[in-house]
Length: 329
Image (cartoon, rainbow, N blue to C red; front, side, top):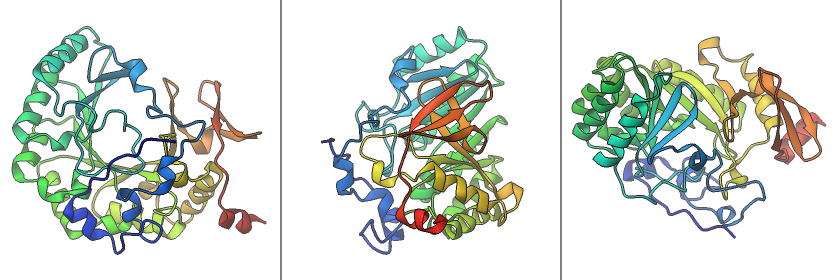
């Protein structure tokens, strides 16, 4: 059995659900706990990307030579049921402390090969604007040329938090990008559009990373509407992620065969700018794999994947849905 993940949702996001039944509503499926979460698949873990093994100092993950990830806070506005960092979210002490930030800055000063930082958590936009600005200033003091990606769901689940002060703080640096996670067209609301326009007025470019989730966006028409809608709002669909092997999430994961078929069909329905990369975040330092290139086939109960340098990986196979199997029979 797997320990349940608490429910937390904003009033705004809960109101987007037309039903509280996660089996009937794609928004509810992202925040309402389900019985499947109590079951732990053999391949699942509470730390599927192995963050703990790449943390030279507290609140920093250094997995790739040129990039580092900073866990700015363990707070989120909504607890997503597919969360892959539940070992950290709401398990720590809230926002990053000065002592932790000092240790991160000192570490980065010894790592000149790092050129890109990811600000994550939790959700970094849960920090107050003044605190967020001070964290960014400390990081840029190490290298003013850092490219920074701020990874957040706040514009999606609590757009009212994106005020002028916060947007201005994010727009101070030219190398800063905002990365949202919109998973369904119902999340493309007027309120979301207002938050985006505010960010864009301050010069903040926006990318989107969706997660492919069963019962949420595992249909061609849903993905077409999602990616076209994002592009219309001047948001580039960047990644469509294969869901990670987070504890208690098997019921939400889509098989890679189904994901590849969806991508094949998407290429006939949307333009190049609207098409994301279908990717798997390989545990450890394996890196992100473009599944349309890396997929080599099925061997027993595993997918065989190969990266650009010829290294092979095996990843536990998800069984395709009955609907998919019927469509190819």
